[in-house]
Image (cartoon, rainbow, N blue to C red):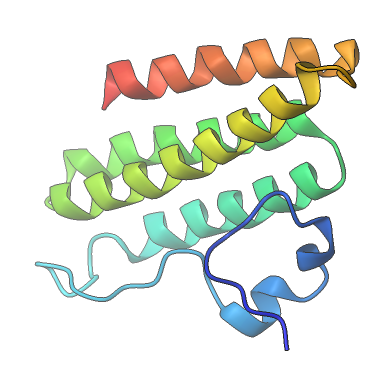
Length: 136
């Protein structure tokens, strides 16, 4: 039996049935507004997270990063409504996913067996992480 502790990008085989068994990446546990204001945003953000994971699993790193960027921007729209705590939680989850991608790209673009073809994606991931931290 496979044990999935979290959303791990380094396991491409996890892409097969990961979300069919585990549901949405972000699930509503407690919301001050009972999810009324953030339900649509959460659905869009979950879709972006799933798409990002799928693209990363298929080595489409820039597209994966772009999906996370779209999800992060969607949290800014949510913050304008009354779900500030939800927006913070969503940003935390998106940033963690971005850091996982960044870490994986760092491993692939440095060291003895590095592949220079991953360096542009690694630099793009670094830029996006810095944007996330600046906007958070």
